Length: 242
Ligand code: PGA
Image (tube, rainbow, N blue to C red; front, side):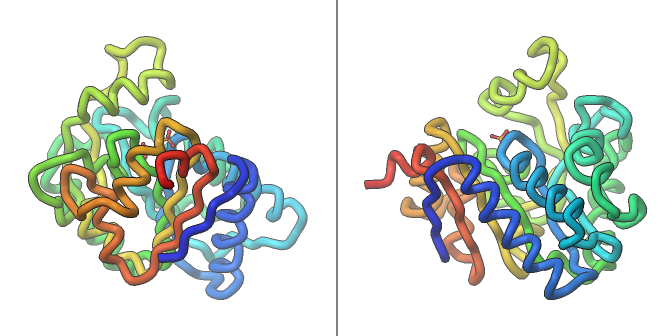
């Protein structure tokens, strides 16, 4: 595991973008595993800047996202599909047909999860997976549990996640209670992983993930077993590590 400590969110975002940019330059038709939430927004802004400068070309890039709320359409402003269009896809020359997310409108969870795993296999797997970390140590929407989920599945969000995500909605009741997410097994099959964390509210989860026991009660701790993980986190996120 390579661990980088940055001064602040901006430096974390720039360093993360440089790793994605290098991946795209080395393999222009790479498969990126992408994440939503506040954490990667600065990284996406920096990638857009490099695209506008003419130094980065997304024309052959493919992407698969970690998760999507169940019950929301792609056009819903709270959907992760909408988020990705706003922050990245709509601002660079990636082909929309090369971008994949779970389909939140599918009510047959089993069929949708199988379909999504097949999409990832058909693409040849993920070259570089970007992850944020939840305050409870979740990755994607893999919430603390008694065991690690292997494949894409439908989850019930925990009260902690609903509370953390309600800031994006008008009221807490509007936060969907279920989501489709890649499983821990799906994430662990990515060839490389980039974990990002910013802010003191992630400090305990990050410390546990990097230095605590590997346990499904703190899903990000599984990353200790992955052979190629890079962690970039700012000082506030490292404040529980002494
Ligand atoms: P955040 O979420 O980037 O909005 O803090 C990260 C996560 O929950 O994985």
